[in-house]
Image 1 (cartoon, rainbow, N blue to C red):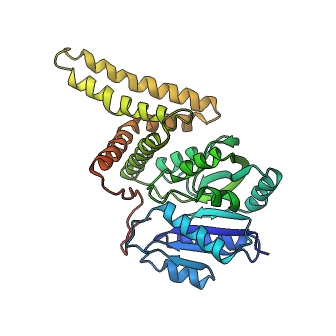
Image 2: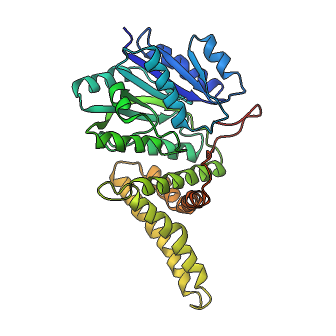
Amino acid sequence: MHQIGVVTIGRNEGERLVRCLRSLQDNVPSGSPIVYVDSGSTDGSVAKAREMGIHVVELDMSVPFTMARGRNTGFQYLVEHFSQLTYVQFIDGDCELLPNWIEAAVGALESNTTLAIVCGRRRERFPDASPYNRLADIEWNTPVGETRACGGDMLARVEAIKAVGGYNPTMICGEEPEMCIRLRRKGWRIERIDADMTLHDAAMTRFGQWWKRSIRGGWAVAEGKAMYGQPPESYMVKEDKSGWLWGATVPALAVGLAWPTHGLSLLLLLGYPVLGWKIYKYRHSQGDEARNARLYAFFCTVSKLPQVLGQSRYWLNRWRKKPATLIEYKPVPMTGSGS
């Protein structure tokens, strides 16, 4: 009996997808159905997946693509074709599933029937390839225990995902925490367990990629606050205020009042190193190595600028009543669009 199914999504992931699919075949129970949802790849990803015996669903690209829509499509395929499934592992096509994860995650879900989702430690495949990859690796190291949200990789209870109708397919980012909010409102819980889960290949080697990723993060902050900013959730309220304060208000006042204050307003810019120091002290107190805490503090402070651009873009888009489009940071392959 197939109790566990797998959904993976991607576009033009090339060898990363092959590594992902091999890791799934090696580390999920034999006979578990694996479905790959492709969003318009031009690099032969679909053919490679089929050669490996993977179920493939090709999305209709006349409809705007979101990762949420891809995951929903894969989930729907599994529950329609394998109705006996109890759990589904979601994993992005640029990730590899690690040995022993499934056993640990299933054990957690079976020991607590109120758990909807279990996630573990996602690590970067090449954390030292660039400071941006190292930043991502630091971000993935979330606290162990009950949590309010998860990322794209997780083992989920089919019953729970069905209960909330899956992901919100209109969201271009931040769709996982949004679904977690709806799950928690129905009494389900999410837990981060102390187990290695996946390897991720961020492939971030340039500042511009990190900048775009931070803009996307700002969009997620703005949309999350717009949807669930009211009490008791108060989702993303603090992050939204911080973005507007440090990304827009402080620099605008410092520069805009420089002439009438004879430059005294520029002293406001001293708030940035103070902010960075506070972030450094917090991260270091949470167990980060000093070098990682410094790196995180520096880029977290600088990220307020692209973050507020993302927040502004969200509200401008909403005011214009325009559909959201993906904000992508990965290199665009010569043969097609990036994923």
